[in-house]
Image 1 (cartoon, protein in one colour):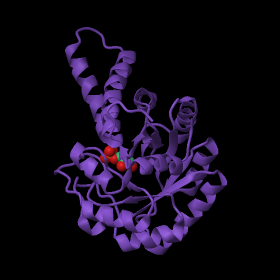
Image 2 (tube, protein in one colour):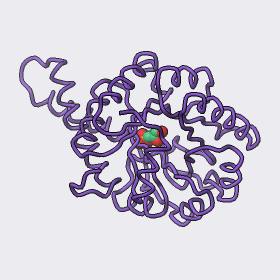
Image 3 (cartoon, helix red, strand yellow):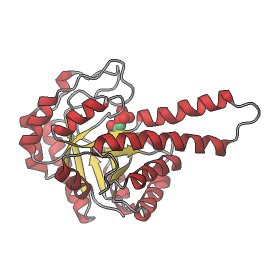
Length: 281
Ligand code: 13P
């Protein structure tokens, strides 16, 4: 069943856990995410990022995500990740997405506030939630520059002015592959969480250790975006299998191998995020 981001993060907040938000770019990704969530009986966020339109278009992926989320036996939020384009936000909501992220983090504060408020107004017509961002995620050299970390006072002001449901914050994670071990600012997460009173979103979950995930969750992170490492796990396994196999390799086998290992990787992440050892919702 489809639920909003507000609902799903409410479940996590009450239990002081986090919900995994997994980007998908292919059918096997959706199957791996929903398969893991149903196996563990956990709520999950299925998300699509506009940057992935180079692999598949929202118009193709979105309706499949919505249909499969509707048929799932666990609560699923279908979310549009990192979007600064109002036309795309409207199209996703029209397709049935239950949440969108308006990303104005590169804009001046006042402009980010104004655009985020507009996104909240649009989403509210669909009964959908909104995530927004203050601070910036760095990914170019695989390390986070601390001058883009989210300022707690600014975050508090931003949340008060916009009425969003969750805030993406910068505290040391980066998108993509890490070149150096991430050094996360845990006290900053706590300070922001205490000030804003809504769930904090961690972007760049790939490459963060299980111990650091747990510390982030203990300090107020309730949504964890995770993509690069599950895509890498699938790709590396296919590479290994192709090298081992003698004779022809069939594409249908490739998709099945990848789906299986990606589901295992997602299951592990979900167990860490939800703190479960078999307990179901
Ligand atoms: P990773 O690809 O680094 O896991 O980050 C995903 C993300 O933050 C999507 O918004």
